[in-house]
Image (tube, rainbow, N blue to C red):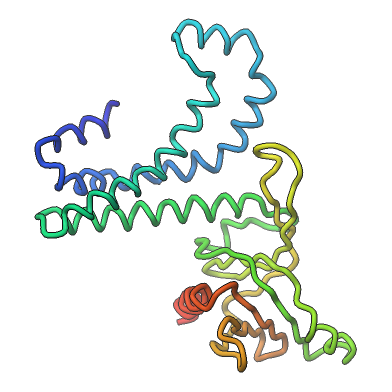
Length: 253
């Protein structure tokens, strides 16, 4: 009400230029990531105290039709709505003066949505002994089939490893790639969110990649310490593979 809405209202007569308004505020939009990270905690607190007299009294005084949890959900819904509105505006502003700004605003909002989504997964990692913030920015995260092939160790283990993939959730940071096992939780809301138990990580300084694995367009290799350890990673689609390979390549170069 105090800042963004007032700026938006300046463009009532020139809606096609509204992209500038988003770009001017883009730094402040980062707050959505923090808000969404804290959402599970606020949900959990609300469940504990929703029937307290204090909250009921607040609702009555403000004459709110809905309880507080409905309002706490609004920002999460809003950040996803912005990108839909910007897409619609772009559709009708192809040759307008503000089209470039609208496109840039959309790209930035989609970037924030990706960061929000990634960080929601990252806060669910358990068992990592250290500070995840020290690994640099989280660039990508996703689920894969992974086969391992270690030079060291029993040949039986190697044979077994070749046939049976492990389900692993990978988190690619600037300084390391983490391998985690996804656990689906039973419960409601926050408790229902999956958690990821940390298995091991590879320092990006000692990582190499092989972009193509014979016979499967969805597979690539991540290898470590001059191929002492090799991880064959199968993405759900060739497109996902291409995105990951690109991102890893950027980190390595």
